[in-house]
Image 1 (cartoon, one colour):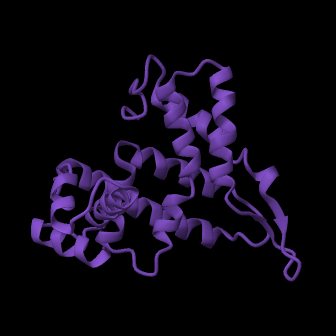
Image 2 (image 1 turned 90 degrees about the vertical axis):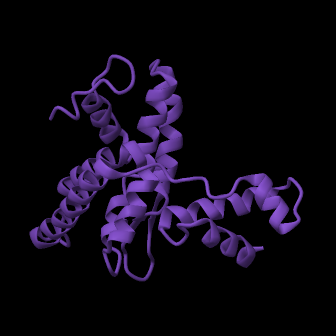
Length: 206
């Protein structure tokens, strides 16, 4: 409770903003609604991304601050991410650490909104067993997140742009930016942990 009572952005408690994000989290569904011809299944593909974009002008009109808008739209955009993580074939520490690294300070909030979303979903094909299993897995992710954040350190910068250009013989270019992004993603995933790993990695993706 004390965590959600923090005034993370301005004078508004984090819980209030998280609730507002929850209120808007499915705003993109109407414009993404399709029905599969062969199964009759209702789909809402990319409603999370669309909803995030639709929410932004609404929040601006309501005079939310830029930081608050950034937070709420991120929660909307990523509200399905935790469930995707726990649905991995193997829920390993590596998979969960990637989630923690990707979501940063918003990891806990992201899990809480995913749990609320799961608990609110009801229908003939959604049994209590399905809901309980998903909540249990999300709780495991939450416990890992809380444990990891206590000792989590920022990722070191193993190679800067100048070093990458020198190693690969590149000039400033979109390709350089792409390599730097892929190197960062490899660090987040835990595939690259040392300077030698980083050098080997950039050579393989060149």
